[in-house]
Image 1 (cartoon, rainbow, N blue to C red):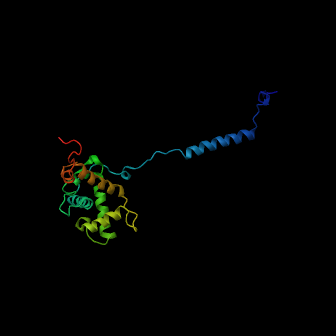
Image 2: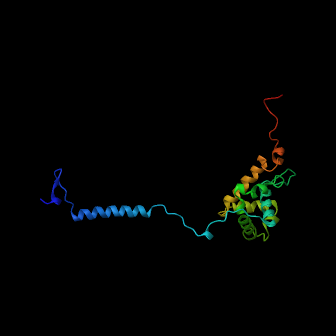
Image 3: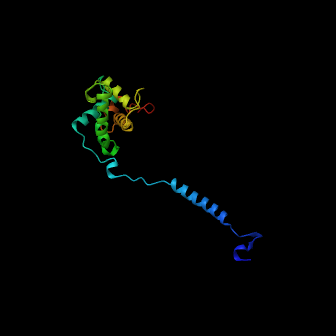
Length: 189
């Protein structure tokens, strides 16, 4: 008996060529399949990546974001609103992460106001009800619109405007208006 045909444990240790190839093809196929589904590193050119460095907004961008904040918390009934609580200062603060998106949001909402709603004017020059309908459309609340690509940024503006007013981030005009902290109900002196 040659070395290749020596029985091991009562069986022949000879592997035929066909069995070897079938096993090898299965192993190589599994390895190739695993390589095809392996996570790949995302490679992007520098011009493809978003610029998240802080911006210095123009006067038009400041006025438009203030109008957006005023749409969220208006001061039309004499009560303080987003403008009095200085919501724009919070939104513009690089710490909160919305500053790099101000120019994109302003372009987006001005374009929607001009073209989609047919006002042929900037967002900041519209009435409160017109600004509200444009903002609802940008958020995807209109039946005819899927919303804006910047929907998350608009939701961030809404959250920061409310947090600024009710949390007193810039000043206490909102917390004073709602009477926070208010009288103590259980510990009268």
